Amino acid sequence: MSNSGLSERSSLESLRSLSSALSIQSEPDALPPPVEGPMVWQSNELQPSQYIVKLQPADVEAVRAAIVSFKLLGLPRGSISTDTFCLNPDLASRLSAISDEIHHGRGVVVLRGLESALLNDEESVIAFAGLASYVCPERATDSYANQTLSHIRDATHDVVPDWARDLGLAGSKLPSAMEFHADRFSGDVLAMYVRNDGSKEAGGEQFMASFCRIYNELLRVAPDVLDTLAAGDWPFELKNPEHKLPHLDFGPALFFAGGRPICQLVKAPLLGSPKIPRLSSMPSLSSKQLHALQVVEDLAQRYCTKLDRCNGDIQFINNLGIMHARSAYGGKSAQHRNTRHLLRMFLRDPRNAWIKPSSYLHKFDDPFENGREQNLPILDTDPWRKISGRESHG
Image (tube, rainbow, N blue to C red; front, side, top):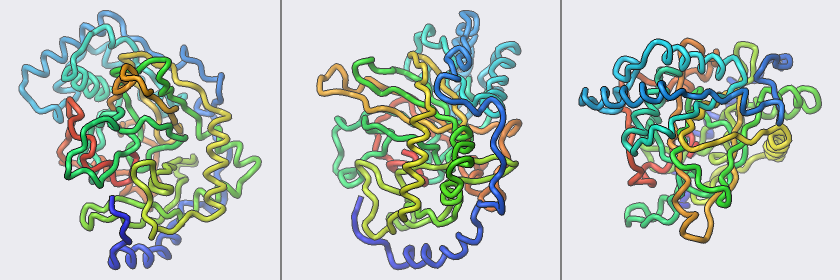
């Protein structure tokens, strides 16, 4: 990515919009009361037995049959739905119930047992999209990257083509650690299918933290941090497909709607990332904002739990109320390279979807715009493609 300054047009437009952005902050007159319910948990209060849902052998056979039936239809993978990926009513009902737990329960569900199906790359993508359609029927497609399904893997050893030498790699293509975040305006539910969890020696552990628990603690001891998070002056650096240079977008990192907090805090567009540095012409975060980031990270580390993971797992995580992170992975030896591999989609279930703040509803809705072509690539042959989404979730 070029380190040249912002174009005059995009810079002036962004700065002129600051006052209007500040006028539609999500911060209410008074912070909502503490969150109650099963999504308020910390560390060992959330055990694997509470969030793992196991597929039975008959379920796995039903999935294999649905894959074959879909392939015989000759349709593009973007057309996968409950109408084209047919499962029996009992399994369909159990998958639909996962959405209830994600939105109104603990916020985390792991569907386990698909590894026994021994799926190839194409079958895995079909099964992932097919099963997910029963949990959340809507799949997000990023308006900038035009990507519905992404491959999470280490692409640092790939041969870089000439046209991509200045692009860098997004966080999803790097083996470096990622601090706690909730992907901004990407979708209500984060879904990941574990094709290969790597090895215990290679790292890459995943962690989750309840933002509801973090919110309650901040409300008790540091409400000023919540005020900072909810202010509309956070300077996000966003990708700009029209001008090719990033542009500024001021907004909050914390929203309120329906009496609950909604966290959309991702650090890459605020601080830059290892391979995609922030433009020097972008404004720096204030001392209050930097302090808020550190306080949230410290609390997330205090309250987090390690996600129990096996090959074949499909993980469903509430992206509005649960923060996630990962440790670094890989190693110097060839056997630890290019092994960890997850598939990722962002989803929404209109039946259970949380209320969103009206002033930012268009941003939450944008990934689910009707009629947008869905790209579900079987192989990650182009990890530099558009680098990352508009909101830089990676």
